[in-house]
Image (tube, rainbow, N blue to C red):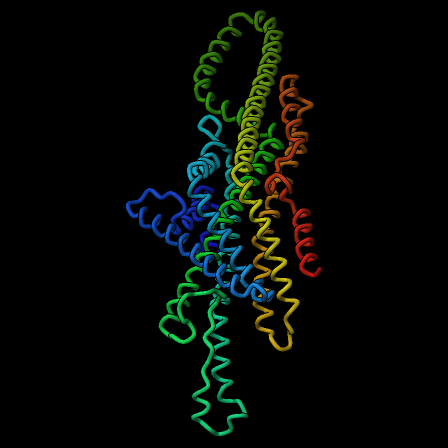
Length: 466
């Protein structure tokens, strides 16, 4: 199953993140260095224009039925979600250079030529990247299922009305009167159009396809947009985990690096050692007294070699610690840029989510389950989708915050007590910076954590019941 979905860890973090970017490239809102890129960009502008026209038709319908609260709530949900996607797409197109720079920094700036990841760190990063792609596939399929349910729901209603008109007792056996009873044509979304949709089947089909296109554009585009940045959250958490692994196993990695360096010099020294041993044999045979006097010199040489090995080990540990500090600073710089990029969008999404929670809960409270169970299920699925859409940002944003806090414990668990003062001083600076966790916010008001999400849900549901 993992191979079928393409989420094998050996594929690499960069390749796995490309899956999210390809979804946005197909929608035309991410740069694509291919000859047919202009057609994808044209498709993106066509989608945005379609969503704007869709919103205008709903605003006109709201003006006509302004006195109907039930009608207005139906319009409000689809309107705010469509506006949110249109704003997100325009925002990403306008700031595409900054978004590309963020992705480039995530893929190429955390590790550079002089600071390459260890095999264990690469395995950790690939594991988190595979997890991000798996969540993207699940979220995309949930979105497709929900919008398919919404689009096909009117077909189900029309079929029920068509069947019911032949089962109505008031017509008896009058087949002609049954056939004269028309079926009301339903659209997936409530909107106003300046032409007669119910009485013109061709216009109804075209309008139905237009609304289906808008609906699929909203749900697919929203999941692609959201999962790109959720995947970035997961990748960043993976970098924190890789940093923690390097800190915890810092002394082991330094010792391993020292042994690798020694092995590289082993063949070179072997020839010199052979010549030295041969000369020592002739010297001992000719002058035994000098050999006895040289035993003290051999002991001093062993002590000097031990001291040199200790010094080299400290240098290796210092070098690895410097790499960890640079890695940590790169992650912190990246999160600051990510926060600045997402801050206005997350604030708008928070507002839309609050409206969605209130509207859906209000509509569900007005439905009698025993008479309209299908509509209740439809709204329940929509509520779950809204919770997942907003909850993923809070959940994985909170996970990233937790991983950044664990960096402090990982730094403390390295064998700092056997290191020199310089190492301890640099480690102390890293620990002091790690005391302040990285956090993403919704416009600077609310931190993206699971606790904040429960408060948002509680406020939204409370307001709808109030």
